[in-house]
Length: 290
Image (cartoon, rainbow, N blue to C red; front, side, top):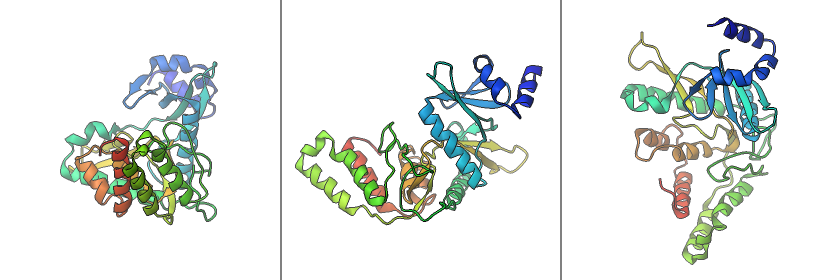
């Protein structure tokens, strides 16, 4: 580690100001990491670059999940915008590890099974988070509007007082499309709407668990199956959702026909087969593929 990096890391334990003042220099000297606009800085932190609205949600949800679980989640240190307010920077802990997407096809069957078990345990621990009061509402972890790219596009929506309202919004994303001019399609959407349950448990949900958002590490001195999840990242879609929703997002984010896809459909989150089947049918009606 160079002298400047050491000084920045030391000062950064007490103040974010030096990093903010030097962000342009640090970005130029940094190392781009896989997974979008993410740069490892000299002081041992990571800068994620994007819009303030997205990064604000990620900053707050990441802090919340870290404070309420023992899950492998990077610390978040700072969030600020450029002088012209055109871009935002989320500063996080750098966690040494490799994106699972880049390693999955090279893993042995036992290593893959180990990762799947760890993901299952992560989801179980997330569901142990309990709100301060009994709730039926669906929204961000604070109970406000939330992001979900599966049905809401890039704009926040909600919150909803209950699952019935959530279902109504969900189906409206399809009934508002031009294909609903076809009578048989309109009738099938109405039938799917009637089939949607409104009494699921409402649980804390990451909402974007996929091979890109899981970082893993290998211990070369141990047996072949010693691979560990060291970080789960990208929490901007996190919040309170019906209990089946994590599985729906796992299926949505999996490559069709892959062994990962088979696992998320069967046992990483068990049950909810009817909910997943309805979701797949809605995507097919909309013109997607599964």
